[in-house]
Image (cartoon, rainbow, N blue to C red; front, side):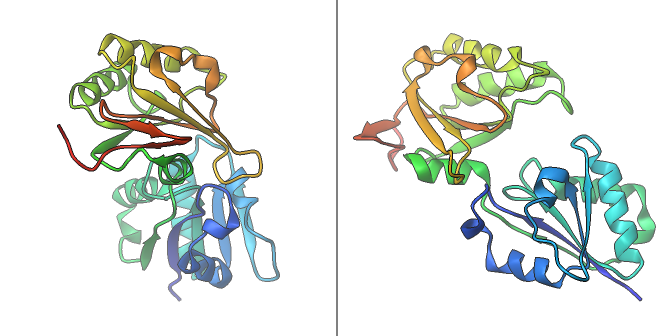
Length: 244
């Protein structure tokens, strides 16, 4: 018997932002695999087995999910946001490279509302023109690569969505990121700190980059740095549709 593997995004937090396609996959699943806080967002029911795991075991988690699917289970690997944006979809395909015996399994990737889109909508339209996303965690890439990408993004005048800005284990990285952007001449750009987007304790704060401090962000914060043309109208922040 051949099972199935679905890689799904649960959105940024609010159940209303889970897509109907993902809800249907969860309803049909026999097994849910994922980082423990994300698995906890799935309601238990008869016939469903939950497999929570720690944060830094993505490849092991992916391998476990593939093994379950090969045994005939209908497995859903859950991520927050969108599974293809700094999440589990890449880990599953990395595991497929390592374990070719599972390459013929039926696999689907179901999109979700990623944090930068939810944050942008809460603030207005700061991603209304060209933008990029950069993960500030240096767990899987060296910090000099992050620095280079920040400098080039600033030079290209992208709006920049920054994921995983500041954790207890690496509190200095986000401060350095702010310094790099100031050195690149971005001090007057608007910066949006979107914490706990779509959750009851959501907080949106907008300042100029030269006013920003590292303590304004944590791992529940998505940071958006506007481009040089980004404007504020009332409480809303938006990027004009035209480039200059």
